[in-house]
Image 1: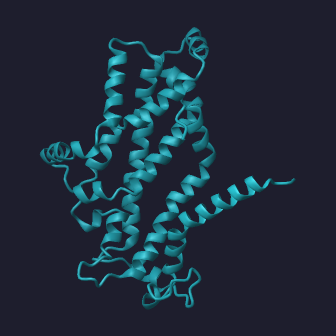
Image 2: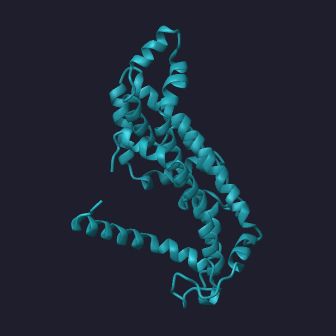
Image 3: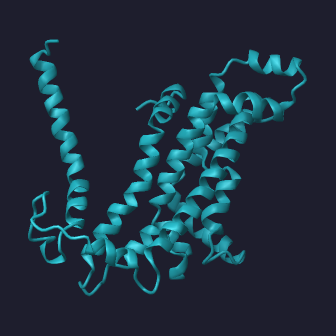
Length: 278
């Protein structure tokens, strides 16, 4: 197959942009295997000296807490948020996509407006509310809102997907004696699997990477998530443990990459069939 010069040049530009975007990650992984004294003096991607001591020191933890505890805490919060978002947002999306109720269009418009509301506007009211509920320094402020279908973006994504499903399936199920809950659970939910997996992937990655929310509500080191655990390696006096920091940063990328690449097929299908195209 012959490739035209125009396509070849375009592929070369895309390849160069890809390498440019990947360079920080490649540098991070490469530097995590370098001795601490060579991290900023040896700028090559291939280390002149290789050591695993950064991973050993990093995994041993800091401030009396092993780094595995930060991973466990992050997994607990991320999995709780994924389950909450997938279940409650799909229920809300089914209501907007299939049911008829009064003021439906107005409620949907109100939900869409919340997407445009800057997150920072609600931080102080939310913090005051959670403080009155004695939820500070617990996982409740980070997980309970996900069980109340508060992420309008995922509701909108699923509504777009559910509207594309044939209504004849609902009518056939109704003739067979199914109620709305059975139609949702047995008909709509299995067919909306690409949108559900897309929601799960986004929720997991955004929760896993969330630094600000955990910083705001968690005070005890034994409750810290991975982003807060990484911050402990930083020292304001300049005496930061760069080697363990980079090693644990590289490890923190693994869960997100595994989930993204293992579910990539459903992720692309969910985005394309819900009408939210890039």
